[in-house]
Image (cartoon, rainbow, N blue to C red; front, side, top):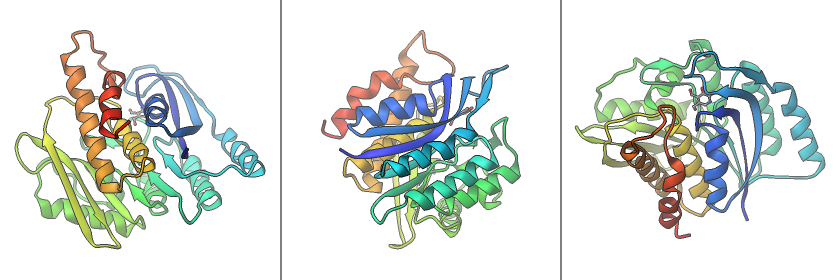
Length: 277
Ligand code: PXL
């Protein structure tokens, strides 16, 4: 059985970060170890959320794992709350990187042209240095623009996205994947670039006209979960895009849907079928 570790916050209510990564990756048959970086009452789109920072737990946890000779087939970071946490992740990558494991970074910090409440442009540049240490990175277009100092555009062409993907691998990652990319009306998808092979891959599906919080985390969790099930990065991002779309589709049909996240739970049977489980 493959084992991964994912490092991100616990938003107790909100269906994002660890509360989606744990169930999704576990359901895909992959042991999912965690480091919670903070405990928040809700994600930061709610007003008046509480937050207990757990940065001081990161080093003792990883030191214990080293003593126990625990290793991981993948290390996946999501939402990180501070410069210090980013630096600790760099140290962790250096300590736990092996020849075969995958370092997967989702620089969760922005969407729709704007940084989340807790961040500024200097933080985005620091996150870019963490992306430079990864095998595969999966920002959305907004995050990619902040990290590479590129002007954010709502409408763009293929050249703009390809240049952005190239700027992302220039940060140091081997593969860059941009989520939420669409060139045609009514379509959306993902486009990736493998630097070593100089190869692009674009996958598109019908656009559902709703955007929900937490879908980036659902995409990333599914993508790494699929890679741990033996799919290559291109197949993995296709499965992840389809599952995320299915989560949104199911949520749109639910009259009692919450505003803060999607009904990813109800689409887990679809995901398992997609990966042949
Ligand atoms: O990746 C989404 C996310 C994760 N964690 C926290 C957040 C958000 C999005 O707003 O606030 C705490």
